[in-house]
Image 1 (cartoon, helix red, strand yellow):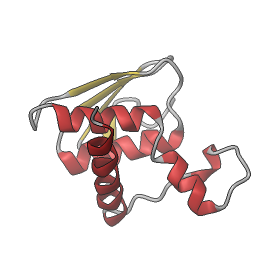
Image 2 (tube, helix red, strand yellow; image 1 turned 60 degrees about the horizontal axis):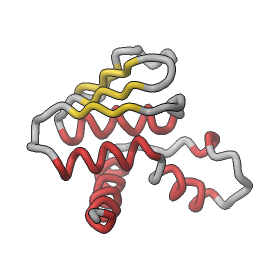
Image 3 (cartoon, helix red, strand yellow; image 1 turned 90 degrees about the vertical axis):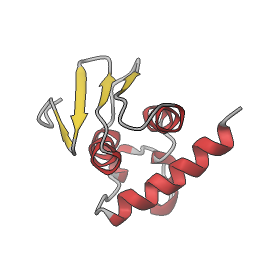
Length: 113
């Protein structure tokens, strides 16, 4: 039901991330595509969609808690650091290995995972 809102907010967040200096890590996309298509594919990973849904569905300042049943890719990890800094919110992502606590552009794992 909120698909349009989620995609519009994802687009807005992507622009804000690029303005802040984020560069997508396309080596995590395993298909043989052009660079632009690889970048586009990364924007729609499940944890990013979940984070954007949380951002539009909760009160600003509220921490977000996301659970993922797979390991978080390096690009989503870097993107979530940027998002936490841009929106000034704590984002907690539980992947199959550990909890990642993102706050003000840093992760509790120290970028070791």
